[in-house]
Amino acid sequence: MHPLLEKFRSKIEAGQAVIGPFMKTGDPAFVEVAGRAGFDFAILDMEHGPTSLQNLQNLIRAAEVGCVLPVVRVPEAREIHIGQVLDVGALGVQVPQIQSAQEAEEVIRAARFHPKGFRGVCRFVRAAGYSATDRFEYFKSADDNLVILQLEGREAIENLDAILEVEGADILFIGPYDLSQSLGVPGQVTHPKVVGEMQKIVERAKAKQRVIGTFTDTPETAKMWKDAGVQYVSYSVDVGIFLEACRGIISGFSV
Image (cartoon, rainbow, N blue to C red; front, side, top):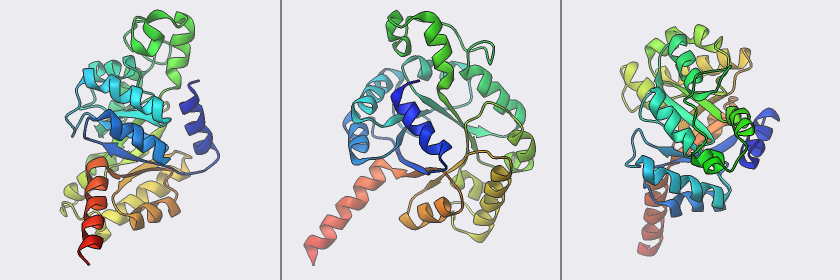
């Protein structure tokens, strides 16, 4: 198992929480800095960020240099996207807009080799050392990579029990912003309706001994969900963190 994966999984299995930002700049330096700052993972965003597949491999290299686990959020739940990001070295794939158990199963099969799935087979890729890694070891170890499913709307909530029964997903991730929109309060991620639904999801997932994650963008909400049992805590976005730091400097300078 890759050392970064081993470290991440050890913390999760010990019941600890992990924390990391979404990365939208497409700049490897930001990813490396996230690791040197001490984040556990960085989500390289191809759904709402400008990152291309070619640039992605350099972001993953930066994550490895900075010792932070590279998770890639793909644009959509398609086999081609999942396979491509894993081929260039992603150690986790995060898939948005999962609404049913069937969709969850299809994602897991796309991310795993036989007998767990049907991921396209090629050993001349970065993840396999461009064929330097023993092919059989590669096909075996590749299935250690994380599969993270994002649950983001009413349909996902209605199908939650069935989704929780699907084997092979490492983390179920609640998308609070899309959830808030589906509940009629777009952007109000601390609205009682949104928080109430999220608490129900967390409780039902914990009852099934499933690891749950969510997005937070304030220290207060990060702590709240950590205390509620969320272990995979996504904290804000690189550009937002940078903006807030800059504002803090200007505010202090202006006094």
